[in-house]
Figure 1: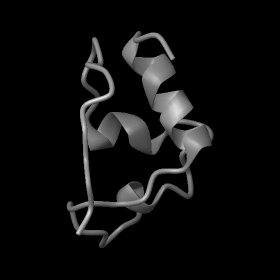
Figure 2: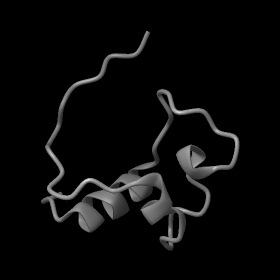
Figure 3: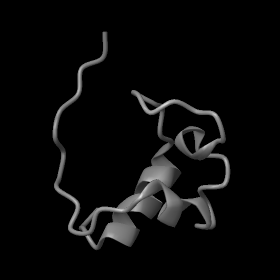
Figure 4: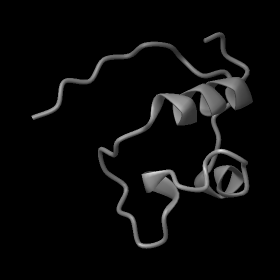
Length: 58
């Protein structure tokens, strides 16, 4: 079981397609071909990129 809580609301939601070409996310588990949409690990470096792209504060 995984405990999940809201940390912040991202200003601009990003689609999977828009994240596929972003430098630094090439090895993100969620973006791998054949990966299922469910709870996935996200490295801190990947999260920082997503937050920056969304326009939210880190």
